[in-house]
Image 1 (cartoon, rainbow, N blue to C red):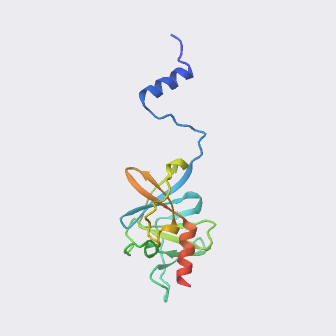
Image 2 (image 1 turned 45 degrees about the vertical axis):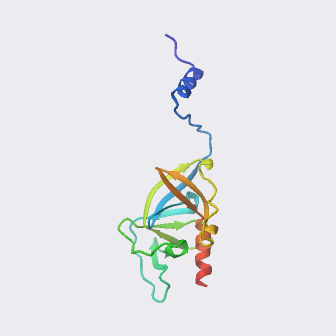
Image 3 (image 1 turned 180 degrees about the vertical axis):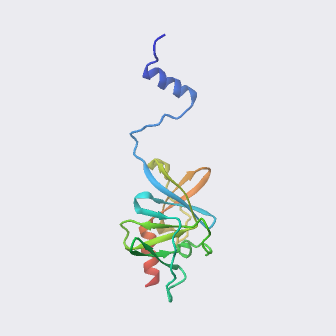
Length: 171
């Protein structure tokens, strides 16, 4: 019995209804997290590090949206709670909270506190859909798109724009 050819294997795969994966297709790494009850994501190239267990030090006189600072190998990083910018209710960080430290953002030394990091995964660019047209004026400049992940709708946010909007609101 002869071995099947590549055409035979592909035809068999297509007939079975299984997706054929194109390994040459460019993928984008994204970090999926939870803020309040919502699911959000950031492009992975904007996140330089995820801190799961970091002690945040309170800084007197700062607004409530600035949780404090964290010492990361001798560098002091501000920890921002993005809930107010996104129109979400503020809650105390739970045991699964994490800090996403930015890379190359307009505001050096800043991280975002998220309620939980759920996954770091690769997605095809065509899986990211345009933002809905009915976004609030508060959210519209921050949303890059929407994708579906594990039966959930995930809002892709602009990390740099989020920090810039925060800085402008604090000025």
